[in-house]
Length: 543
Image 1: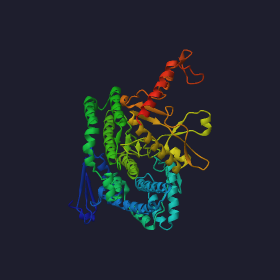
Image 2: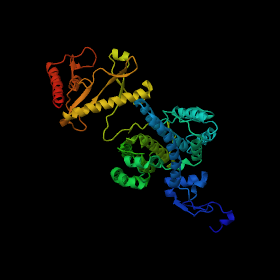
Image 3: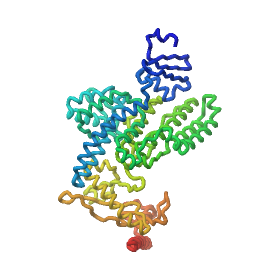
Image 4: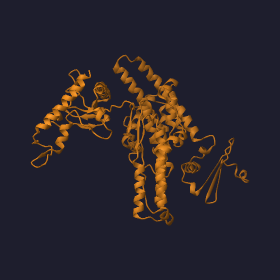
């Protein structure tokens, strides 16, 4: 420190004795800060981040630029744009006079959230090398001159990111993970676009995933926050729950396993049996599922994932000392979430995706997988206290006439087939019909485990409910008093007949479920009939 002035007052002073590193800030007009660590601590994310910034982004080490401050400032900027867009769409919502107009306006408001999530991810992607450097920021800057052209260009970029390919002179990776399935872009005002361009000047690689929670909270009015219980919870507070419930059982098992392998670890060589023990423990970590039934914007899930990843990294490092090579297995698909608020539901998915990619980068693992993002099929936009699940089965008229079986498909596939508006109507009516029927059945001590409805369009294009509904042939009815979790109780429907057919024999061998069929014994016919009549008796007497 005695000769720093002779070096023309450099902003950073770094010394190293091959085991210990000291980095001291010396920016004009700031309070000095010292970062110190040893070789044994060099692989910690916070230390890797400091070393990376030292060589590629030294201004990040200015004391006033902490990750929390960067996150907070960027959240405020994006939330301001969110409010601006929402206020414009709120006018459209207020002007809606029909159910059709109301549904359209509400879906458009949700697409605002998805649009801004894609924008936030693109900022992060270009600053971490997942997108070409400055591609997105330069696109924003140039878009001010022609807003309509910018919207079309951005829509093209999102479409390319969904599948990978060329965008101008640049090669774009395949991202998808549901985030870019919809390439909707809103035509921004000049002021909104300038604010986005300003936000792009920041270094998004250092944001905390909690930016999503902050965004969510700031984008809501105070009365909405109270109604939804929306409030940012710190990582420290989340860990007070996650550590004892999720991590401590794993940590105890890990401590025991390390004790068993201590001798081999000291020698630096393990055998096949020891490798199997380590692999089994890693598999257990990567098999656990974490559910948040009211996930908000995903902070609880991200912190849980971060802790699992860190423990797995410790296992991988330990295995390396024994001469084994393990690859990471913990991933975002272990997360499960329910969230009733559509905006928070969208934010949570981007939050954990960014957090996962950031953790891997900061801890020395590459993000070279294709697609870059993973599908988060365990996330559901629904009420945790009332969760009738809508599942779609497709059958064309030709297939129906030929007697083909239904095929389970995703809601996205339904949207792709019949369009978003009609798909939403089918889903809405199906759930309402089920809820009405299940309420009546519950009074009779019956659980409707599942059912199906068939819809079509009449000659005028009106959605029409058709064929049988809520019959024993199209539903499963269970006696509530015999229900036990994890087991199928005896049914009041044709499940009894199905179960018999599973063990039925024809010519001394199990029936292959192809013609000819085995003859039904009289007692099977009678028992099936008795079950049908009992269900009818219960339901009719409860009214």
